[in-house]
Amino acid sequence: MLIKNRPDWHMPESQATSEAVFLNRRAFMAGGAGLIAGASLPGAAFAQGADPTLDLYPARNNAAYTLDRPVTNEADAASYNNFYEFGTSKDIVASSKRLVSRPWTIAIDGMVEKPFEIGFDDLVRKLPLEERLYRFRCVEAWSMAVPWTGIPLKAFVDFAKPLSGAKYIRFETFMNPRMAPGQSQRWYPWPYTEGLTMAEANNELPLLVTGIYGKPIPSQHGAPIRLVTPWKYGFKSVKSITKISFVAERPKTFWEGLQASEYGFWANVNPEVSHPRWSQASEQVLGTRDRKPTLLYNGYAEQVAGLYKGLEGEKLFM
Ligand code: MTE
Image 1 (cartoon, rainbow, N blue to C red):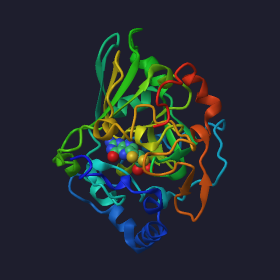
Image 2: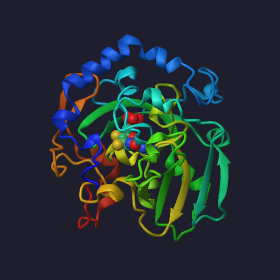
Image 3: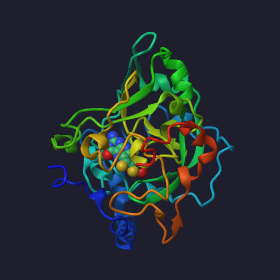
């Protein structure tokens, strides 16, 4: 069953990043995607421009995080997305407008001093927000470089007060098939879940992202709050989070649940470890004709390689 219903990101990289896709995308943008973005579709959370967190943007840029390449064009990043809750193509901008991102509550539970729930608009004003330029590498072998705004995950962990027995942090996306038609496709292990070790969560890099390009994050990128782990393949960066749990056991993740022979827990970027069906040696830079060599840990080895000392027996790169 899993093989029959293979999602379209299981294509070989040559197809996943074909020029036609990029050119079509550009034609689509030129031809009126702006109109779609501004349209009032059923379920839109609030009228455009009325986001209650608008005053927080742009946030202070943390200059410690620099890029080795130009920032991806905003329209390209905002129109080539993976968000299976709203469809299996890259073209989910219109359907993702069904996402109702207010009110939005996040449950914090599991091994914490005291489980609690917090509204997104409270959370985002309680913890520090900053902007960082990060590379982002999808397992499909396309990449982008974008200015994310978010809360360093480490600051959130301190805020949540986990108990010492917590070894992992598990993130869960909302579950609402009426709002997100993709969740009616029962062969997927909904809701989308992801996880990190506590050591990874306390690293400086992961961000709980609330904004992009100096604005609140739009639906297609995972409003109102998503994870970004720039040294891992993009599927670790779970969108539209409603639950964060601190747990003792390694959580089973969405893609692992779907196809464990191809997608694992660690998913660290490594150009020398191929996906079972395509090479990871290089990547197509979104919105350009450039192919770049892929970097170990997506170029963030200095910050994260130490996390994996002693774990060499694990499948760290799938
Ligand atoms: N989160 C949820 N809830 N659903 C998804 O389908 N796709 C993942 C990740 N987070 C996904 C998700 C994958 S495969 C990628 S590459 C990134 O989101 C894409 O992020 P972007 O669309 O903002 O570029």
